[in-house]
Image (tube, rainbow, N blue to C red; front, side, top):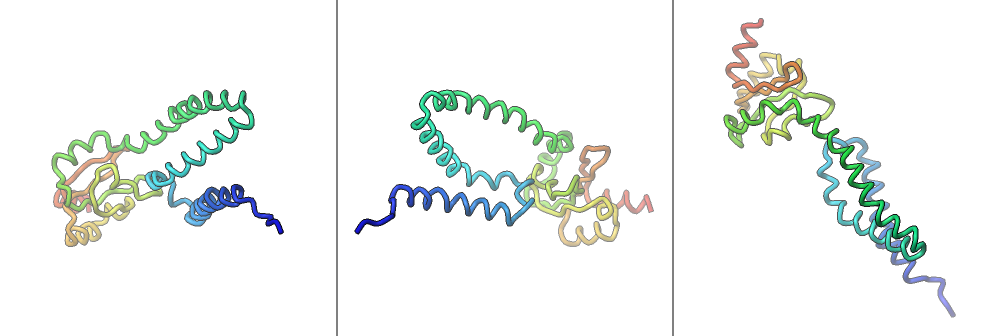
Length: 181
C-alpha cells in the first residue's frame, strides 16, 4: 500500500507555510501598531531572507534565463526602493535636529522628560533616548498636569514650537506657564 504523502512538499509547507501564515496573522491582528515601530521587523529579516533565497533558487532552477536576470535586477531594485523610502523616515527626525545636542549635553540618561506629541504616534521620546511622558499640546500647556509630572520626577519639558522642539527645565516651563495665565 502506497501513501499519498509527499515528504518534500509536506515539509516545505510545514517549514515555510506555517511561519509565513503566523506572521500574516500576527500582523493582521496587531493592525497599525507596527507602523511607527519598524524595529519590530528586524526579527523577521532572517526568515524573510531564507524565503526569498529559496524562492529565487526554485525560480532559477525552473527558468534559468529569467532567473539569472531576476538575480541581477532584484538587488538593483531593492537599492532603488531603499533610496526612495529612506528619506521618508528622516523627515520624522527634522524637528529634533536642533535640540538633540542640547538634550545629550544637559539631560541625564535617567532624567524624565515631558514631551509634546508631534503626531498620532508616541514617537517623541525615541530620538532623544529618554523616558517620560508624551502628551498633546493641551496637556503640555496645562499647569496642573506639568506640576503633577514634576512631583512624579519629571525634570525637563520638550515643547514643539514652529515645527522644532525646544528644551526647557520643568521649573522654567512652569514659570512660563504661570506668567501666561
